[in-house]
Length: 95
Image 1 (cartoon, rainbow, N blue to C red):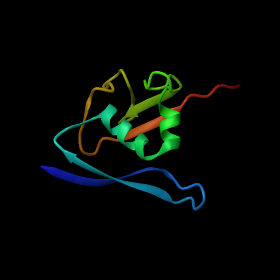
Image 2 (cartoon, rainbow, N blue to C red):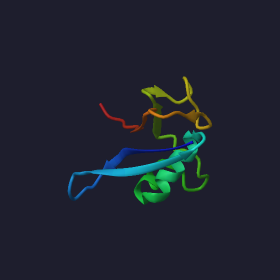
Image 3 (tube, one colour):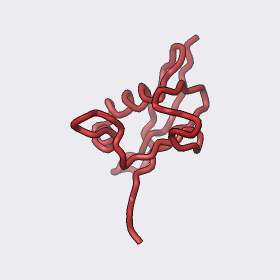
Image 4 (cartoon, one colour):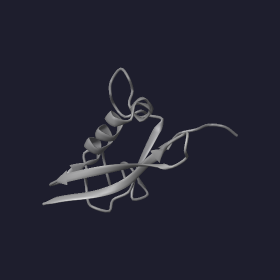
């Protein structure tokens, strides 16, 4: 079964308009695969998500699936279902 849907993965810095992405699914998509596909198409996202030397997810990035932080109900190896929402949150410090 092939399902196609649209998601917003960011905004164009010049126009402020959302950048649409078309995802095509055949069977299950895994969280890590989806993040790698997105970041392969968006070099700035790639640099922000992955550690350059190991290509592991950066420790400064929190990934949420349906508002739950990884490790609670999902891991990078978890399958995604239609309607799941992925949020990326960069860690920050300050006071």
